[in-house]
Image 1 (cartoon, rainbow, N blue to C red):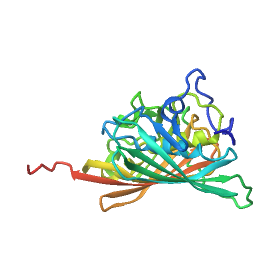
Image 2 (cartoon, rainbow, N blue to C red):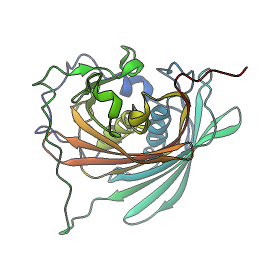
Image 3 (cartoon, rainbow, N blue to C red):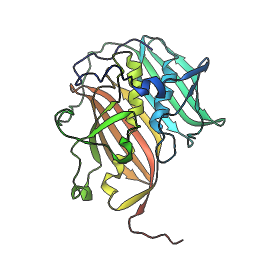
Image 4 (tube, helix red, strand yellow):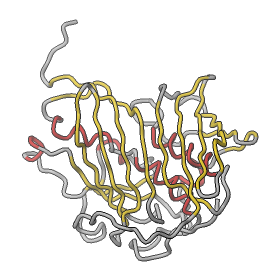
Length: 299
């Protein structure tokens, strides 16, 4: 994976130390080639739920897809479904199908397999760069830069030291505010360690990993004081990539949930570069089963 390159400056507060390579590049997203279009991925961090982290599967699948396209195209979208629970005790095999290779757009289908069965399916679309006079975007929310405020670092168990990303929650709610929260949250996020300019494809793979952190939990915010989560997993995940960025520079992750019901929650997100450019848009639906707080089991 090489061209085009991620932006060199203008969107962050400088590089992390160069002697600390991001584990997301050296380990998590470093797949083993087994055969043509067949790869094996291992696990770096497993959540306390003992399930495979969905962002890892999405990121690794995108790495596998990107290795099957030419250097002059870049990913512009991906659409994924989680179909079975992943087993953290065994590696994941990624099978790539070269669905279509066109003059402007190419499509790759990826199947993640464990124990002989698919646990995840994904389609990624790649585009050769094309100029366009038609351009617009929303405006980035106005929030304090990550280096100017003492942000509360961490989102419960998510910010454990072994997790290869850094998170700074924007305007964390007080205890009183938690009683009536809107399904919206924002946080600054970046990969731990140094990735460098490199290939935008790799930064997109890292962003795919990052995008699943705390995302579905946005739908819980209005209900967290009345209900206890019994079961919560992702059903699908989609991403659209708009502009080059560096995933090892701080980006603002703006998340909101427009709807929840039927034991499901829908969330949408936008990843902003610090210079105000909209880099990535995300969407996800997941299963959320809750129990009213204070209810007692009849068993």
